[in-house]
Image 1 (cartoon, rainbow, N blue to C red):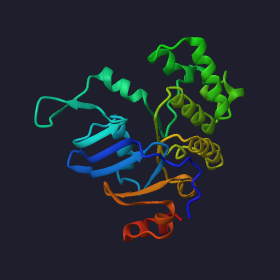
Image 2 (cartoon, rainbow, N blue to C red; image 1 turned 90 degrees about the horizontal axis):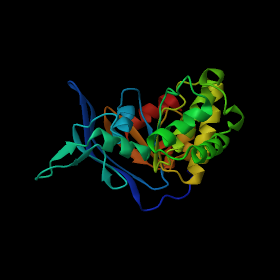
Image 3 (tube, rainbow, N blue to C red; image 1 turned 30 degrees about the vertical axis):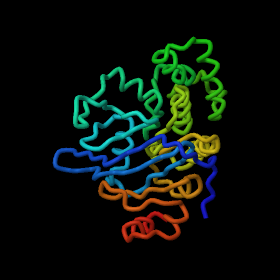
Length: 265
């Protein structure tokens, strides 16, 4: 039985992927992915290395261009717009794509903090530079977010003065500062020493409790089992199985899912 911590998802679809395909040369890494994520839902994506999980996540905010299919966030096509007739699409202008990404928070495996800026300045960067919000308002909000991730006393520290777990928590605060409607996490604990993993997962649990819509690519099976509303198992660029944590972890239907879980549980 799932011990989901998040608020119950609503019927509003935040993310929709239909027939998404992506190829690198001769290798098709996404083979027609169909997914929906509803408001307030926590979707965890699991699977072996090379199954296409991270590529799919990067397609959701157009960091990778898809070769076929459609991705919508908040009812708007991501990265593309209708053009002409017969359902043709063309890529949006870079400025429009940047505006779309403002509503999609992304936390990477590596922290990608500005090394010459303090934790506070890293969190403030997006709202002040991209959204051009008043500096005083942005600073107040940034301090609130650093407090939320347990780093109020590290606001004036530079990344080199922070542990890996602290840097990742700053990265989460930085993404939240843009007020996203959707948060994407690409194996956010994979670059951390084992003793630092828990502090980052704790912040993510709090986000789930608050009702944040989240898609999490993770190898932390305990987190997926505890926090996810739904779990998707991917292999070889396809969604092999999807269901509640109880269904996927306790009674998987597919041999490939069972074989994978036997190696990680």
